[in-house]
Image (cartoon, rainbow, N blue to C red; front, top):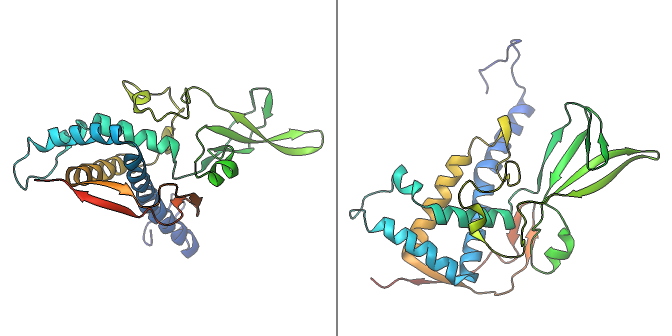
Length: 247
């Protein structure tokens, strides 16, 4: 970043470089750690889901020699584990939304969106109510700036499709080809999709593999609340009791 110039020969200034580094730190660490924290939470709460993940990971582990590391083929076999991780990302998304800019005028469910206007695809549906209850937003919505006779106003437009029976923890919704395009976008979509998606998938699945192979656990605080700071975290840090599996 210090030595590379753009097509006009210009270099990034220090503020631009600092912003890029902060983006890499947040995007490459905080999002994945948030996802792994909620994997701990949900697997503690859902023993039947834990057992299925455990069985899948043990089946992979049985075929490995002592000390042999996981390889890419092993990762590809973790289908149920990844479905579980995706369902957790649906229920507890690390990022609250993404900004977009309209490239042309268009209509969306009766709203006129002019070219050049910014809009936010947001996960913050009924946020305050659900956070107060210790829950997290389950429905995808779009928060749009629209023009009215009185100026601008904000409107929320619900998105349907992926959220069939949205209160239910159901990894099977990701079976096969999964949800329709752009209905589940924890890593964004299109040409600006997060370049770290596969690396995050690798991190999460390796974490799940080594964790469930060695331990079962339970939450110390059964109804611990979720707060946003700015990503979702457990109020007390999710203390757990670990129980090693018997050899």
